[in-house]
Image 1 (cartoon, rainbow, N blue to C red):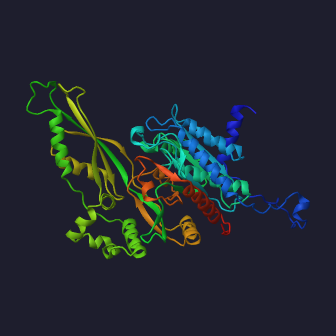
Image 2: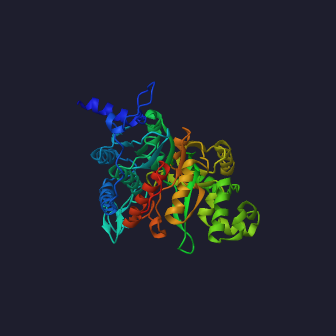
Image 3: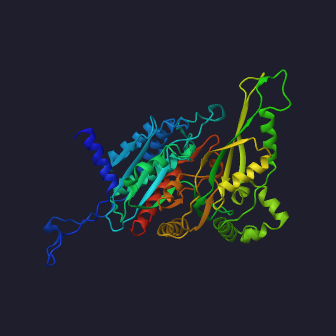
Length: 490
């Protein structure tokens, strides 16, 4: 088989849903036993060797972390090929794409028996944010396994979740578990820089691969312990804030710093940013945020004010207390954060231009044009040029769906937990698929401990081997529930 024919076969396997096996139409019913006409019932599922799965997942994640996919530049191609080979070894069709030189995307499809028409996508991203080795206890791309934890950049964001999704599919395939819908694994690149050369490219160029998809799971939610450390809650994001990344450019006379003019590009920009820092955006409590705080207050016996957050925030004293927490502040207002400053490359040279990059995160419902106009007014200098670096419309998914019902069933059976829809204050690649009318939730079934959570985009990122194993088991259960299989004991 030539390479071209093989590639075409893999693409066809990924893109075209296979209908359930059925007898040919006939005028009279076929009364012969199934065995006599060449059809045999599927054997019962085999037990899953969870120790083997855990060991294999640990080794795979360690190798995955060792592939440095820091973005920029990303270089996800080798990681995509490694994941593809992992699927192919187990007989699951998989293929890769290279949107740009060195960039990578991989997809694989686990076939169901076709009683449902809508497949589910398990989405993750292969690129990671930079890591400074001098700040870490271990080399950030070592994939070191120590003290029952797997260390390295991407362990939680987002290579660990990708391994959970992949190993769940392999475990189902090996056990001979038949699901009533297909499961499509997709790992992209470039998420940390907005996803245009990853999920954005995939959605625009390979829509046939996921044409039958109706549901998606991605990063953005997980399992949280309540205050008593005995009960848990499943937090599922149904929406997220959207980025409005801006570049502010000031101009002024260039020259030697020994005889500076009264105003330069730098002084003009600094003055404008000082005014911007004093500007406060309006408070707005959207539905998912109101519901999140209300439910958490009920479950966790939280502050009574959070039972009706919108009303409570009208009280100045409580408002100041609530907004003093940066995470809480970000949930109820648009945020505007200068992050990059640049001007002259030499101390004694006055640059003709100076610029700042500003990371704005907008609540669903905020109008980007109105926000930009408000920022321009706050700057107080019409000469400052404002360019948009990144922006896309916020899109939400319904809080009720068959997938949410399945997550609720998993929560009750596995952890005796409740489910809380929420909003992500960051953004993920889910919006690309929500634009295609796919119900997309942020939820990976792992419990991230507070100390581990600090490693996401921080230092000493790691995931416990036991958390990884529990995540795979929960994902298998979730897919069995959502795939029409009856709940089985662990």
